[in-house]
Image (cartoon, rainbow, N blue to C red; front, side):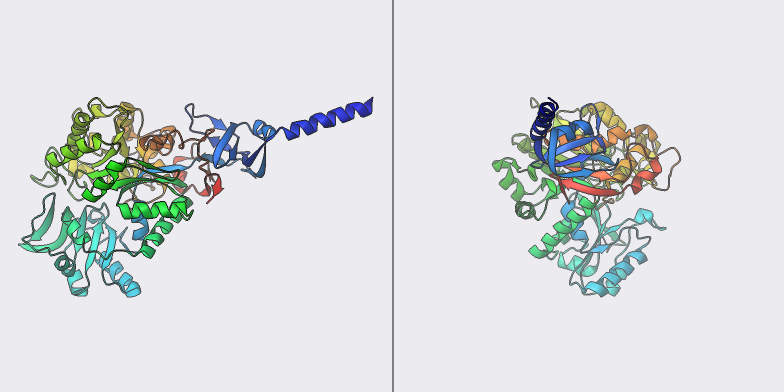
Length: 540
């Protein structure tokens, strides 16, 4: 009898073992922030064929599934793969091959970096980016005289940190055929005593960029691979590149198909006739790694360069309003064209005049349409009743929290005490629309999404300034910040059904952190490290 019972028990145990479903990977013993609709936490999940198959209690997952690989997370925190809703991925990679001017403290510091770079690289055309005169003791635009003396024959073009102003030497100006009499709408060629200073603001910069040496295919590939390494090391699994041309998009697609690039890409096409004529008739292009269904448009410049278009004059520049980069009629016609296509319109708008015009144009162009999710990129300064245009269906905001903490030292000087109240108003935008997409705008800001999270929640710099936070009433909660970097960013890309949370059926994109981002002291958030990034359930 005992023998019969033993055999029966063994049979039952063997049967139970055989009924376990085979999966590729089980992650267990973790604190998983799923970012599902209830913001549930879990202990474990199973992955099969690059997607989450089941999420829940460790005991249930281990009793239900068997895997080739089981990873013990040792109690560490896991969150969905992070999404940067607005960045310049390709630009980041190119910048790795150019002069880095971030953190420079004076024109002399800028020039020293250029000299050091040229001694090492010996370039025929020197290109750099990252200077910000607001960080200098003399907070005025620089002059090209020193660059002319040091580089009389080699063109030099150095873009401001925000990408909306450029310092060029005479050799670069000559190559671009820019003189003191050159006229370009939508920007400025700055003169001093009737002579060129070398500083170009907004649209005139295009004349110089058109004479840049074209990067070789090898340099383009290197740029994309460099950018991927930087981003995956920081926990990014999807990036929304705000402005790419067809050749780069097709290169990205080919590298993804060849499995040399695993980063998922939401590629906004740059607003050029060539791109629009090619992509709009084709309709959206969608693979598991690439999504092309949006157009990136510039409406105005940036606040730091006095290029943002304001309703009233700048507080620190008499009778100066900034400028629209695109004409009103041209913008309305463009919006109408995009509204009649399958594409989303994503417009850079910073000044309150630009934001207001964009919002009103969006509303008119989308009359009678639904779920278009047109985006106002930056939405930095909003006045009057313009917040009321935002919703969660047709007009949404895509913002960059570190812009607030980078600009807070001088923004009120530009805007005055009244307008600043409607600037960087992320909580107000969220309350109005119910969702807000968060990004960095890198390489204008640092790549780290943990700085994004920290700035959104604390409204302080990493030194804890200012006490209590900058316009703290517009801070987000930690839950809101994480949603803005995952599920809401996915929503802004029409991808919320496939990514942005750890749920069955979605891509197995997730990261393991060394600290609990939802519970550590605020000041520790910028220093959180990514232990491992996974895309399709595979460690990167």
